[in-house]
Image (cartoon, rainbow, N blue to C red; front, side, top):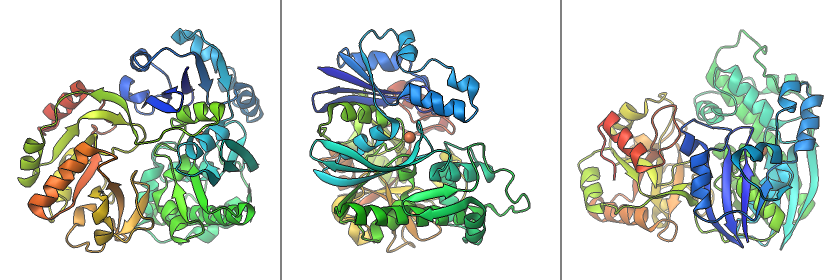
Length: 485
Ligand SMILES: [Fe+2]
């Protein structure tokens, strides 16, 4: 039996194809349409999915009736009347039964049923689904039950997005830039943010004074020091998350934690949670936001653990990898593109659609920035052989295979390009099992140079989604005069 999980019609659509416990395919719609965070499915994505089999059943990642009710309550009348669920899928020619599962239940299931745990506490924090904004769950074997939830309009994710907009960034998209900017500032306004927005935080209950759904652009218009505002909202967010995690540990008495929802992309907060050692181990699925709920929808419906191996689940570039050429170029100090094998499912480039270079020396960052054109405060991340990670980084957990945690760099002078202002790096650890091709590249580079890591950033033209096909890669290569392997 083949089940499609679909998350679409809001922002960043995703589609997953699952047969029994195997995830055969999963991708973001944006990779095919070339529209960043595209909310809608498209024929090319569906055609690729169909190559893995036609669906017997579709599971949709939300309950449209509940969502419509919330939108009406919130005054989003036009939005509430759009076709959703099966009515939305009709236009793409699907003619199979459609099941619905709750938005937060999908997040929880995507996390728990891809995790290596058979018992775990699960915390979901996002902006909003139907009504829930924060929820706590307990997974035990095939059982997944909700313990508690906080409802709209009280939302930590919405508060973070509202401040993303307040400092001139794009909400629901550029939250990671706010997080990066926080390292440059001091949390001088944390008290003011607590006083102005938090009516009560008595874990787990979080009550806001304001509905921040339409933003907080009105807040303290004279304050213009974006770095300090960013550091302050980041600080308040971390405190609330820590409070929630502590509560969850006491409530469940479990030792394993699963974190999900868009807020779980905040790798600085994740690291603070890991370092607090409240739980023994933490699993964050590499796509904890709504697109990842395409996998979560299926898991919530089948209530079984999926055979999770790695996140390379998307479009396949099937051509031989010229490792000799790639190594020679890296040794010559070139920035190279890699577009090989199946695309990563999730917002981060984890090796198969990446731009890489030697991270050592003072000029590595400039070389990459010529192409990436990023703000000066934004760091690049290292991809490192897992067995060497602890030598170079003070890791909060044993591994960080999906770039979800930050770690202090032990020798920042040697690796300035991958070291952030606060002395940390957003580390991706890699094993042979996870990605033999890229692990092989790191291994060869290490053997030749003694350096077990490369600078790794996404292979995309500014403002566009990550490269998907070889044609996309060639376009990138000719635009930037970069060799792609
Ligand atoms: Fe969500």
